[in-house]
Amino acid sequence: MSKDGETMSLAIASRPLVSLTLPQEGARRFATQLFLALGATLLLAVSAKTKVVLGPVDLSLQTLAVLLIGATFGMRLGVATLLLYLAEGAMGLPVFQGTPEKGLGLAYMMGPTGGFLLGFVAMAAIAGWAADRGLDRNPIKFAGALLVAEVALMALGFAWLAGLIGADKAWMFGVQPFILADLVKVALAACLMPVAWALLRSLGVSRE
Image 1: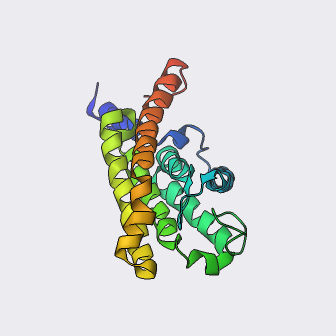
Image 2: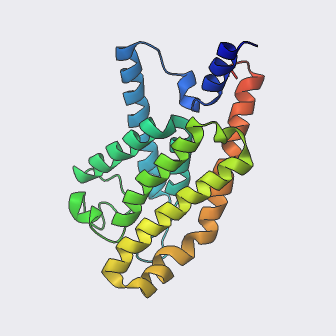
Image 3: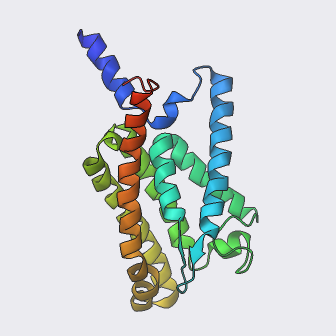
């Protein structure tokens, strides 16, 4: 294989999963990205409502959804999707976990879950960054990247919550109860993406 061919193969292999569905043309590409982002914000809203009540911050499937969106969309579209989700919430749409029961809009976002909402953006960015570089083909490497994303989420959530209720309570109610469950979600996401790529290769859809 020529050097140019090797370079092209590496470029294709490092694209996120969503690249297989995006048109090349500017207007059609943007429309497709917008449609995917809006659909993903709906998924985020549904996953946020799937929860177990534990305390100031409840357990939901949203972390898994954020990881998979970042991994599937790549960093740029993944971050844009999470920012769109936050914008929907800031406008008063009941897309967050405790809405509308615990408030709406910016007032809710400034509450106990505010740091975790910011952490979701960081989590999607890290997962997307890893997918952009082809790490989502390898479950071990991808799990390492997703662990970094999980730490970023927890650090931002803890720091925010500690400012509201103190460090001890923030750790007890906002971090500790979620560690095991979130590790399971990290492992699941790290396995699902390589499986998805392998399935696409077997169907002849992937260009790897």
